[in-house]
Image 1 (cartoon, rainbow, N blue to C red):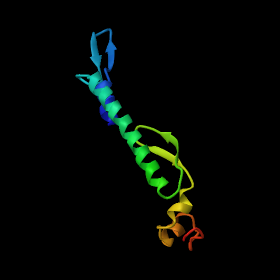
Image 2 (image 1 turned 45 degrees about the vertical axis):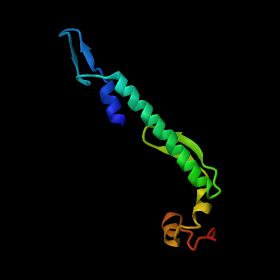
Image 3 (image 1 turned 180 degrees about the horizontal axis):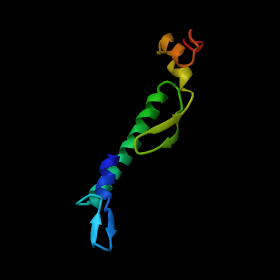
Image 4 (image 1 turned 90 degrees about the horizontal axis):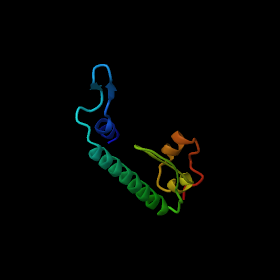
Length: 104
């Protein structure tokens, strides 16, 4: 999405000596670029809602730290809650604490 937005919204640069526009999309479409931006923003909001709901079922309050065009970063004490269904091998590779002291 990000690449399509950038391409459709790019008008290039105008060269006053030749009177021509160089670079950018040959047929810029700002309406399409705005629509792509809207859909991307909606996708991020949906991702946040799904992730918060997912973590909440394990009793974890996930807080949004950062969001961008292609990612959302959460903060929360997920390690202890998620260990209930993660294998010890994952714990050992990730934090070296297997057998997991938080496992139930």
